[in-house]
Length: 282
Ligand SMILES: [Zn+2]
Ligand SMILES: [Zn+2]
Image (cartoon, rainbow, N blue to C red):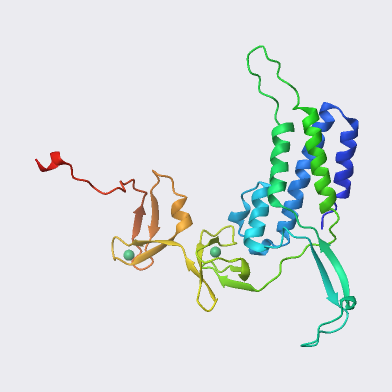
């Protein structure tokens, strides 16, 4: 859990100062607080999210990833209760048999993203001069910035009421990547055809999720299949590795069968069908 109280107090103190500079600093603090909230929620579940997916650093993208990849319940406020007595199959315990462990306050990632973007637009950029005589302002619009910071404070106050974070609920599936890394995912959040990246930041492998008729999960390696120029053995090159290549780049791949070094490059090609015109037939 992060303690948002000192941040909220700091923002309120800056707003009370009520100068252009202090309101701008309040906006910066508010923006950082939104980021902290998102990253903290994500950190609880970091095992399930790949580094590649984490790199989209804007808070609303981080939280959207959190919901899509890890925990569909992030938007809802949840309270965790445990029973005072051991569970007995077939017996429904009384409501007063439960003790509250804590509450996690949910939040709407779209709302957080909007607030984060609005603060940036209002406070953290000066107004561009429209002509050469226009004065370059030192700060953004203080009144509009202040109104937006107050919106963020209200959201932070709401989230600060939480007393715990969950790491997610539901069955897990796991698979071992070609690099040896164990990847874990929440089964209920995987969709057939979805693409997922290995959690190992050094690894370029990615997989397509396949769900069988019996509900079982499998993970198909995404690879470009390149026949070796010397011995025709198929070489599997991670798809993410080839898609990162620049258009004019030539990469070398070694054949594990005959040790021949093959060179690969992207090729621009026409994709529409060839058409014949009357003049071709003349
Ligand atoms: Zn891997
Ligand atoms: Zn070969």
